[in-house]
Picture 1 (cartoon, rainbow, N blue to C red):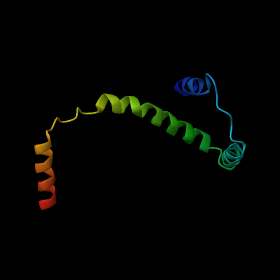
Picture 2 (picture 1 turned 120 degrees about the vertical axis):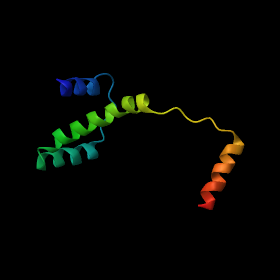
Picture 3 (picture 1 turned 30 degrees about the vertical axis):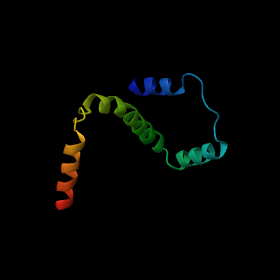
Length: 79
């Protein structure tokens, strides 16, 4: 069901025009590799879900003043 929902969201709304040459390459590849459509769809679903996960897990940036940043740079160069 999640695959059908994903594909519905993907194909819903206005679509941009298809690059005929790229479409022919993709169709030929999928014809030679029947499992490719499954793997590409799962990858697309994973990548589409990542921005939501990254936004939730992103740590808050540290507040630093210019002097602290300068000292950190000095320490990094000394290493």
